[in-house]
Image (tube, rainbow, N blue to C red):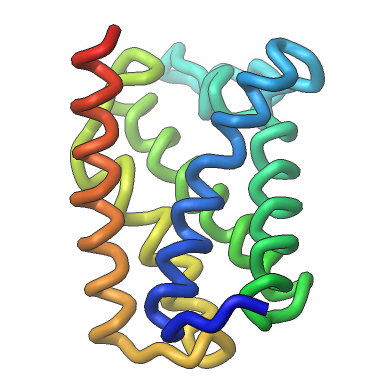
Length: 157
């Protein structure tokens, strides 16, 4: 078991939830990449979520967060729930972006980071032993870290 303060544990889980779908897509390429929305299109003519939100990504986040949670001293179930909530919040962000008719993969600072950090941390805060101030601090920290990584990645591309 790894000994970190509760806020650091949660930040690790947010990073794992965010990274696991991306890593799974790199390792598995197009295998098991069925979109969550099944290709459904709404009346506005846009996809519900798009091809980037996959069952593989949700599964990867749940499994990775579950395993990391065990290393951090939490239960597998708590970790899996964290991963699921993070990816559901991420899907909600994608839903909003599709309604705004933004292209898949378009980065929207804040919308692409805050929900997937805030939702699981807030919903599971009692089990994670963190308060509201820590939830906000973790979410802002993740926002800054994620934006920095995106800028580095775009610079390399």
